[in-house]
Image 1 (cartoon, rainbow, N blue to C red):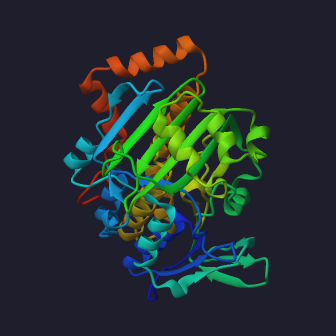
Image 2: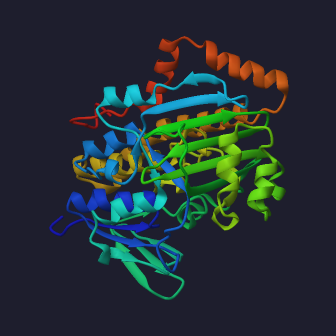
Length: 392
């Protein structure tokens, strides 16, 4: 091909922007189309775990995330009596991998990605309306009448993906029947040292407090309720606080100090995993391909890994359509593991029977350290170095 490969990316979230960074780095022509009228800057926090940082490094991208957030230094799981259940080996495995796990705000990660991009390639207010395939191109028409044509289309347009619906038809979301509250606030407490992460486990409820640097803490809370209730939640910070009465003081303090308007509420939803990601010149990436519950903190990480592997496949495979199929072959087993394990851990974390919760906490507490580390390494390892079709 005498001209550069032209790739259309639907969606300018974390997955879409990361893909744009990777593909621009490889010399491809890239256009990104976002249906929102502006790039989303609001949102909560997230983690880019060591495996995702390693994936970017493998394709020559260094976002220097330590400048945008807080590398994880201490990860604890505690009960509602504030008793330590277990320290998680995330810092140790990250050190062994040679790449920090970093917690930061969604806005900060977006800024890190945008700094790596020629932002003129990003087009907003561009809702995909129609996709037209031919033997040698794919055409995308937008709701406002605009049209673009390229060699490939990457659907990175999130859990409500239009590209996914084009490929798979309309499929309902899977409700988990609990609510997630999410917020970022300025907060200081002696317990929250640099790089500190703590998850509190209760009966049908959980809370996480995460240092994201700059004096800010990302916190989240969950509580069992119907999907309908969760979707229509309109409570205040005091209403959230009522769910955690009797929990450690640090939990009640941070919730009560967060303005109600800064607390985001979402119903916990994902989709049953589907291996149908693409056909012809089209494929999916990130939440469009494999939306998962937040339990493992790997939603962003999986989208980042997707982008890196897609870059490797396009670089190594002269036929771009064959590269998409190879990308899918590589990514489907790993992302299915994460979707399934996120659901398993979500169900475990939201158990509300006292006996079930005691068993859950005791099992985690008594698990041999070698077994715990091996389990984490399954998820936190990404093949770094000279990745080839064979080694992947």
